[in-house]
Length: 199
Image (cartoon, rainbow, N blue to C red; front, side, top):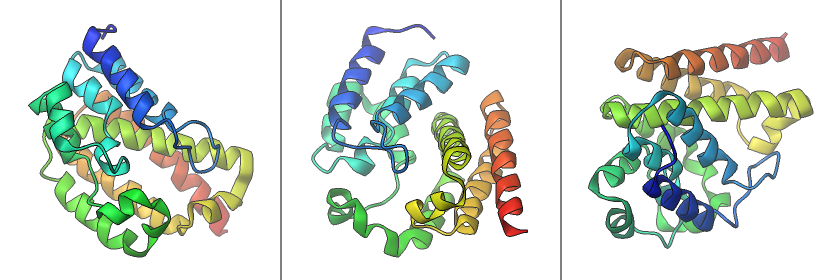
């Protein structure tokens, strides 16, 4: 899909909202992730709301002072609905301080996966693009830094693999789409490095 006025508006909004955030390992500006998710979606999807939701998919989760009301007013009910479907359930304190999120990681991911099974097709497209880019990022950082990346993530590599494998399994059950093929391919590469490191 081509660049539209609403997509450009979402690019600007996502850039402003995520401007102080960085990716965990590369320390690249966090906005590279929403951009990449939206780019993956735009390659396959001719639905402006889905691409806008891809650009904004982390704002309710990560930006403590940006509300559902603001998202609805700026980008509409359908975008809000898609973003809410792919948003993990954090407390206000966890939104404001990401370092305290680790304690409830497994329970939160299990809840996310439970909700994922009931998501709309549009939300699953965003989730598939999100997981695909996250997996590719893990693979790229592993290539650069090796086994040490798991310490930076502060999460056991088997836990990480479990989450992405379950998300891929659930999305695959409900969505037949080229993005799912890309996600499965990235997951397969992650499985190889997990297996290699366990030898």
